[in-house]
Image (tube, rainbow, N blue to C red; front, top):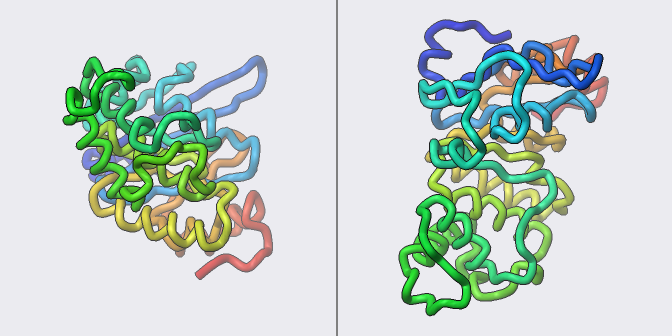
Length: 259
């Protein structure tokens, strides 16, 4: 479990005692975890465990009934979603949220606009908003899509669309990436590319990763927290999570755990 000492003082994100009830159902029940700068902290658990609701509470789309969200030393529990983005939180979604009819570059430029407050319009001359385009091109280069900038986003492969969504998040100049199942639906080759991408990003961004692909989780994560029935039942290194009988009983089962 989480201990409130030196590690929390250094945490970029500190989630403290979050609770959310819907009627008599406790979807998140006194959830606490922290994400340190430059680490990938994976959040795993069975379907219905409360992972997406927890991410909603961190990003501000769902207000907690109790508890606090502290980011970079500031209590952001009551911040709006746009205010959290400006503070440095960026999220990708479980289901891709790109605009299929816009170009790859335009999709990312929208996010750059939201961060900068620019008056960008797609029908204006691109040169009049070159700063936005430059930020978008940089984000696309980071995820390996620089050569796809001019095509419509709907023409991308599934794996490329997941990478585009990460580029959209990067265009907001985040300090922390909240990635909700970024590997969902990806084939083996696409998964390998996305894992390599997340490894590269780790050196510059803290990442809270929600993912069901255990091969990827154990390959990427510095630490793992396990959510079951709205509670964190274990939090620790990959070795500690592999060895936990409670985690096996609640989620991993008796299947072979990746080394």
